[in-house]
Length: 555
Image (cartoon, rainbow, N blue to C red):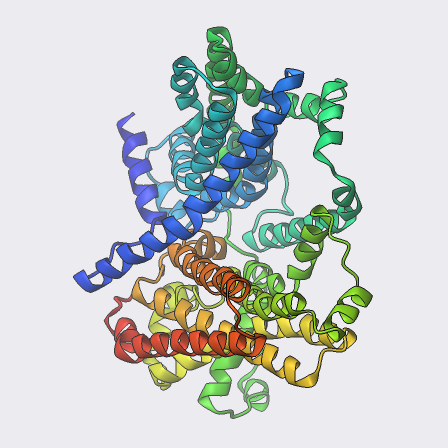
């Protein structure tokens, strides 16, 4: 037990963000955490709780009030498996501590139990909050008694355990009995393929989403045709038992819930004794191929370029050639229209190019306001979720010293990283938006204005993201996914971006609707706000951006 506790503490510390190095950085981290809590965590959990409450109240008349929260728990478990498989693979097999652990007199189950606990602790904070919000939404909607509230506490922490155990068992089986998957590059490529499959499935389901109606869904539940629940209850038997525990106050269900977890953990530890060392011994982090080149051939391919352009090519090549970075930082910039289209269909809006063209030609003020505020909102959100800027310095990892010793000024490196953070989201937004404006016959002056607003929005998010990452970059990581998922700077940047979007877009909408200002004056206010935001970030950058890099300790 002592070995397990010690190892767990070590693993948690190794994959967590390092603590701020001085008082100034501590204050900044506290302020950023404040923004993250109130701009992301609180709104998301509140929205999920409201959704579960509405579903519960809708299903009460047919006696199926617990199916709403059960559906949400199944969705949470599914996403835990999808996003947890890569995390478990990397933590179990591709972390840098493996070569140091093997010579120690440790049993396989001790290593697996400790690594599993560390991964579970660091990867499920958001799931804990979602489960809690679901329970609160159900409890309020169903008027749950004090006994149900007390019994529900046990599942807030334990619900994601079974999905992650599935990921752990699958990883050990694949690593022990197959050779194809025994390096992290292939794992990352499989993850990329899985994400694109999910996107294709989303596109294919747009027609279903368009016809989805809550009344139809309730009728389906009432008729007893619940194939989805029957299948999911077999895959995740912990979900119906947990729901039954607090919704009906069943102690038998509670004992069965605890028993399933004990059995699952026992199977995981037993399999680890048989399979873990078999999969991990002799493992290399990535397959390499040696290419022999003589000096003359190497020099003949060299071309002299400016330092800034060479650094730009270095940044782009890393992003494009690394599967995790390509998917999360590059491809995401070009996928946002799919989600916009799905939202429009779900909300039953019958929007066509012809309708938009007619409304815009008739100078419909709400349509013009929709484009004016929409381009700002889309640009800010796309630039924030791609993690390009908020991981610009953290991506250097153990090669951070490269930034300090190459003959390129910090300011030049900073500007190149900022330009990369602007380039891809700008292309990703404008490559769709400008052709759409042309098809709708929007005047050239308006297109230029929209483009200016988009670029100003993206520039603000890019500069802000790099500045936040410079305060406390995550330079210690074992794999590229950890550099993204375990980096709180991405979370902080996204929180500020969402808060800024809400203030600008929602504030601009209410200002326009409740006053007599014109569209032109509204656009002028947006330009002034974005200019002020950019100037503030530039001021912070000039004051302490380079100093943050200089003072950052090397890994």
